[in-house]
Length: 433
Ligand SMILES: Nc1ncnc2c1ncn2[C@@H]1O[C@H](COP(=O)(O)OP(=O)(O)OP(=O)(O)O)[C@@H](O)[C@H]1O
Image 1 (cartoon, rainbow, N blue to C red):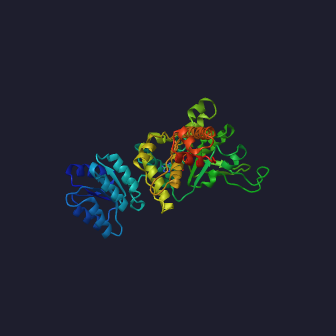
Image 2 (image 1 turned 90 degrees about the horizontal axis):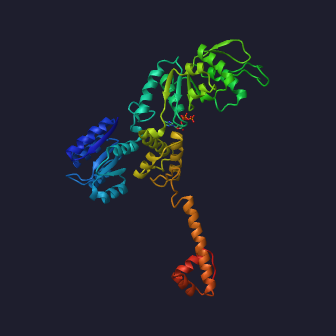
Image 3 (image 1 turned 30 degrees about the vertical axis):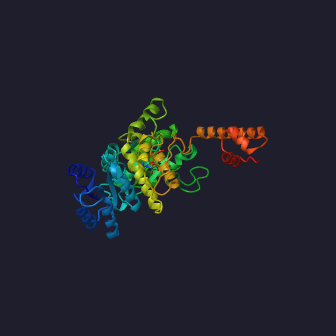
């Protein structure tokens, strides 16, 4: 559990926050005044502190300055400020405080910020969800724990592209057989000519070009986990053979005659409407029933706002770990934009977008740009309009100069600008006298 010290003199607020933070999995030490709070921060070394800036015995600034002077490894401090103390909060940020939030406090926002601030070393695996914070992902985590105890049953993972189907398969592997192989194959990406030998393997000399024996993925996975992605794209001619292998858990390599036992856990995934494929005759109904034993459905990211925040924090943390000098932090505005966007590319899109936002960011600021939003300084349309306006302005200056026999003062008067302004614009547009 992440240790957190709450320093808040208001009894109602202190109690409400303590309850909420404990429900969210923090270990809370609530102190009612600055001196007692400071003592706890110095003695017990929590990972985080939430501090009201207006305390009865000292100001938040005094407290923070003393903490910095006396502690070699101070916790990350988030201050709560009232309307009149924003200036102090800004001063605190300059001194090195992690963040501040204004009253009235939005508890969900506080939790999101605290999770973002929790240093990785203070997170423990037990209370740190592996797949996400949303109820849907927590449910999947529980389903995976159950599935891990029944390795003989196939698993079918469904969800839009980029929702994390492979990540879920990896989690199952971690729960079930972390030391055994994890082999992944994308049935849609393999050319039809080689998919059969890639799946089932071939003996030496089985066909022209088969110079050596090759094991297929079913064999290579050993007693680990075989992840067959995009199963809906399995070519129809191969499906009867696949069905036999799944059913009998045995195979014969191409060109071979010996049966080989399959020990691997079989996990299938698809973003397609398998039922529709069955109806249109492109996917065999018998395979559909055979693989659809333990079905796990991952909802799209736009339906899991908690995960948008949780994943954002993870991806930004990852970046910060790789580039310790570049610690970014989302602003409130970044967070609301991330929550508003509809994420057609799901987690993959979020990951790529944040990678870019971290790389292009500056200081703690992310350079967040979401598809469809106007670029800073204007969208393409605005840019084109500006270019047009500039061209028009240049033409007007040239015309005024010609009209006034290139007399600068008279041209400026005709244009209604000062002589200095005209001269500056001429320089910008490359117009000589
Ligand atoms: N819960 C998660 N935690 C961390 N990263 C995640 C999570 N879910 C997805 N990702 C990241 O998002 C990207 C897409 O995930 P993944 O490949 O598992 O999706 P998928 O559903 O299998 O996609 P596709 O349908 O295109 O094969 C990867 O970079 C992955 O690391």
